Length: 158
Image 1: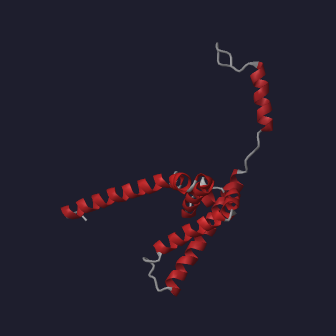
Image 2 (image 1 turned 90 degrees about the horizontal axis):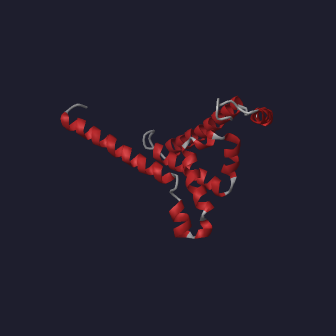
Image 3 (image 1 turned 30 degrees about the vertical axis):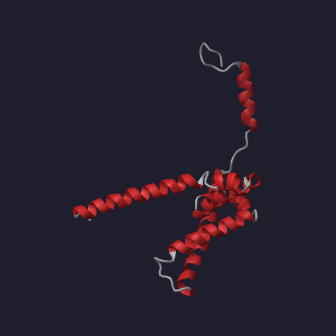
């Protein structure tokens, strides 16, 4: 752009037109639909696992939640280890990253990427690159909420 009036030069205009012709149009609606359907499929699988815990292992609806989440994380980690979850992620986009399974994938992907550096410096130090912040802020926010609740209970507000 010329410094005098911030208008593009003729060469820049030609390049911008060339760039617009070559830029790939992203199928936004198609991507959103696929992400929605795959994320929904993950939720259906999670619901089926929860119902199995309830009906076959005599859990209640309240107590079946934690083992269901742990099972979903374990399955995503297992699929990541076998290279299947990466293919699902390429197809589904955010539909595979947003559910809790994306958390398991992020933890194991960092481990797999750095396993050649050893267990301590590679796997151990890189395992919580992404997951560490999630765990930290999850624990901190749970502490703050519990503290506020305790204060309200002590004051007789709740």
